Image 1 (tube, rainbow, N blue to C red):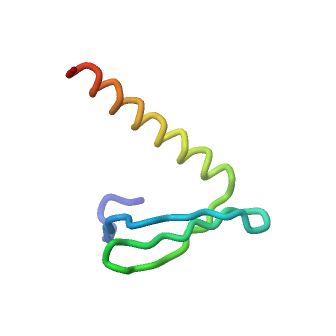
Image 2 (cartoon, rainbow, N blue to C red):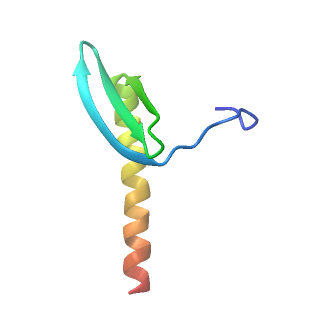
Image 3 (cartoon, one colour):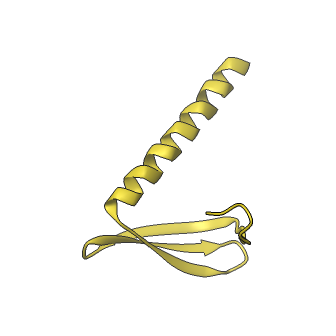
Length: 67
């Protein structure tokens, strides 16, 4: 995503996922009621999962360091 592109940020209310054929659909509802679906390949979701695992691991390490 280019740095100068306009992006709308939504606060997540809920999300569910389902495999549909050769891809995964993630249905998302934002706190303001906006609903949308994201389609992704398994490879894209693997990359996203890796990113999220790294972020959450860093957060856990920071929390443990401050205790």
